[in-house]
Each structure stands twice: as structure tokens, then as C-alpha cells.
Amino acid sequence: MTVRVYDLAHSRAGDKGNTSNISVICYDDKHWDFLDRELTVERVAKAFQHIAKGPIKRHPLRNLKAFNFVIENALGGGVTVSLAQDIHGKSYSNVMLAIELPDPK
Amino acid sequence: MKAEGAIRVGAGAGTSDDRLVPALELAERGDLDYLVFECLAERTVSRENLSRSKNPEQGYSPSLHNRLRMVLPACIKNGIRIVSNMGAANPLGGARAARKEAKDLGLGDIPVAVVLGDDVSNMVKSRGDLIMIENGEPLESILPKMISANAYLGADVMVEALNTGAPIVLSGRVADPSLFLAPMMHEYGWTLDDLPKIAQGTAAGHLLECTASVTGGCFGWPGKKDVPDLANNGFPFADVRADGSIVISKTPGSGGRLDVMTCTEQLIYEIHDPTAYITPDCVLDITGISLAQEAADRVRVTGARAKAATPTYKVNVGYADGYIGEGEVSYGGIDAIARAKWAGEIVKDRLKAQGFKYDDFRVDLIGVSSLHGQPDIRPEPYEVRLRMAGRTYDRKAAHAIGFEVRALHMHGPGGAGGAIEPRVRDVLAVKSVLLPKNLVNAQVLVEGTL
Image (cartoon, rainbow over all chains, first blue to last red; front, side, top):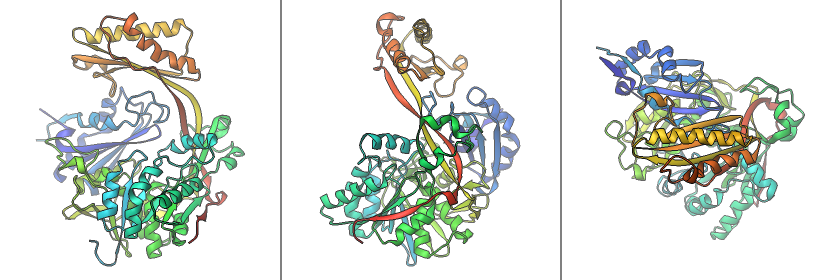
């Protein structure tokens, strides 16, 4: 059994230059420790390997029951020069939400 | 109605393309003191600099006309002061346009305080040694192609402009949260060394700067994150007290939702290191912030911290960087993907045969892999849209992409439909450098009589 990030958290992606930042925000505070343990930089890097070169930094935000993932080299050179359709990477939060994790139970 | 002893700062735009009606509703029903319009994306100033070079009257945000025409009567009637960076590459021209709009609306002679000095293009021309943040290279290499260089000014000069008493304050490039912080500093006499208050005001500005993003826009998900009456979602405002206490809310009676979830998404949005969100006014730390639902559509923000501002301004340098050409066409039904892939190869062969070269090139299968890649693991859809795009300094090569994709109608695999006209756009690239603040001469002028 697995659980998706989608089942436990919501997410939004932002852009600055060629860097994407993607929040992961728990619906329920009680899932934060689980995500803290399982939603590792390695798992996120694997999910984004076809999109971003990285590196990836992970910032825990315990006060907001959240995490902030900062993914570099993720936006085709940046909004102004990117050939992508989604130049801002707004849709990247959905790559994060689709990540599968071991069942917390 | 706002409580006694609080001021109310509203957000009327989070981009030049933002919706107009919610700003009017906020001006009419929001009981505001200030209405802030943030209208400059990273490359907007470059684009407006090009407009200005063609016509010296232009160069401000073209959206200024429609925006002011819509909200000015309500703002003047209700005593709401307008603060905006719609001046873009020509704040003085924007001020003249704003005054003309007011006059045409029968509102009389409205003075406008203009903030100047963000344009540092002359200065950076002699500073090719500055290092670009994005790639660590000296600025020298892009100076010949430079279109604009603008420092992100801070709240201090906006306060100076508000101190004139003019009902409208127009600037060019100013950091987004600073536009919101300035009215708070002006009202309460906060200074930049009063860091707890500057931190709270900056956090509030960050929460407001994308308007609907905190009221249920860019948020909803049917059955999971429902948003009531999203079609009529309202714009947000902050109720601010002299002690730095902040409550975020939205236009009474508007659609959408404003709660801890929407506020949390916006608070983290476009933040990198959450202990060091650098603005011209401070270095904000959001790791101590608490968001609490105080009432329906009201969220209290506490615990923002900040360190003193850095000694530099971030400067965006815009430059011409060639062209992007694009073409699109659709395939549907049996073997749609196979035909689209074949078509893509044919176009690549034809472009190559004509000797066109591209610095970057991309083939997308829309419906399969245009957003997140990995076409080989995606389920096959009924129909697919082939999109091809390339970046090059050769305008002909850029145009040829869309030309050859459109020609697939007659010269490609069977059943291609719905190609777009060949599309070519100028690339206005942006890099940034840091410039010592003491080299930048921000100043305030007033157009009209106070």
C-alpha cells in the first residue's frame, strides 16, 4: 500500500528566474512528521528528474505544517527565455502531489 | 466595516493582466484607505521601455487607462489613495495619463506623486564588472543588448511620495511587498529599523501581492479544495494596526474563500529560504509566523520576524535575446500519437535541410507530455496537439518553425488539422545584479498642484 502526497497535503508552485519553489502543506498537522520522514529530497528529485536538473533544497516549515522545496534549473532557463508551454511551472505542484510514499499506517 | 484604530490596505491587481471588476468591488464596498495595484512582471519594464523608445509618451503600463477609468470615481469618492507601480518605464508619462483620465471622468485636477530613480540603466552601462546572480558571469556580456535596468526600490521612497498627500502615487520598479508596506509606514510613522513592524507589514504585503491567490484563485480543486462562487471571487485587504497587528480579509459579499489554507499557499509562494526572504526593506523570516482563522474570511497573521535590510538593491537587467518561433497542429483518432511524432520528425528534417539552427528546440505532444515530460509512460489520449518551438537569433529561422508546422496540413502525415498561424515573438530576457543602495538616487516629484 502506498499513499500519495495528494492524499495528505496541498501544494502550490512559484517561479523566480530558473528556480521553481513548490510548497507542500499538510491538511492535518498529524501528517507532518510522516512527510518530514518520507518526502525526502531524493524522492522529489526522482519525480522531477525529467523536468529539473536541480539541485533541490528542502525547507521544513513546522509552524505552517508545511515544507518548501526549492528546485533549481527547473524552468527551461527561466520565464523570459523558456520554450515550455507552462513557462512559470505553475503545473509542477501536480508532479509533487503525485509522488507515492509508503503507507503511513 | 473596519475596526476603529486600524487602516485598511487593499490589493487591486497582482499583474497587469489581472481582472478589473474585483478591484472596483473592493473600492466600492471594501471600506479601504489604500488600494495598491501591482502590475509589473519581471520583463514588463523591458517591454515598456521598447514602447517608450517608439513613443516617448508611452512606457507606462497600458492597463493604467482601463484600471483608473474603472476605480478612480469610487476611490476619489471614498477617499481611497491609490499606490501603484503602473508607471513602469515611464512613471511621469503614467502620471500625465492618470491626470488626464481623472479630468475626463469629471474628477478635476488630481495631483499625482511620482517616484523616480529605479531606472539605473545609465549607471550599469559603466559597471560591466557587476556579477549576474543567475550565472555568475560579469554583466559586460549582455550590456550591448541591454534594453532596461531597474532597481527594485523599497518602501522608503514610496513613503516619501505618500507624505506629499497626493491621492495617487505612481512608481516604476518597486518591490511588490514594499508597495503595501509603504502606506502602513506612512500612517503609523514606522521606520525601517522597527523590524518587528516592518516584518509584519512585509508579510502582509507578500500575502496581498497576488490578489486572488489568497482568496481562492489558483487554489480550487473540485471535491478536494472546493471554493464557493469562484466565478465572483473577491480581492483581499489587510487591516493593520499601529502595533503591527495584521488581519487579512476580502471584499464583503464576494465569492471565493480566504482561510489558513489559502493564506499558507500564498505565504510560501515564491519564497526560497524561508528564513531569508530579501526585500529592499528587510530580510523577512516566515518560520515563526502563525496564521489563525479569527472569523469567516478573516485570518490573523502573527510572528513575522526580520533582520535589517541588505545594503544593495536587486536590479533587473532586460536585454534582447533573439526570437522564439512556434507552430501547432492537431491529430485525432487511431494512431494520433504516431502521426504526431512522425510529423515532428518531418518538420525537424525540413528545418535542417534549409540550414536553420536553434539555440534551444522543443517538441511537445500536448495532451501527453507538454507539461511534465516522459511521453513514454503516459497513457495514449484520443487526440494530441503537436507543438514545436525554437529559440534563435535568426528571425527567419524562428518563423520557419510555424511555417513548416502549418504546411503539415498538405505535406505531412494524414489527417492534420487546426494549425495555428506561424508565431514569432521577441525574447526579452532578464538577468539580475546587486547594486549598492547609495549609488541609486530615488526621488519624488509631484505632477499637478497639491
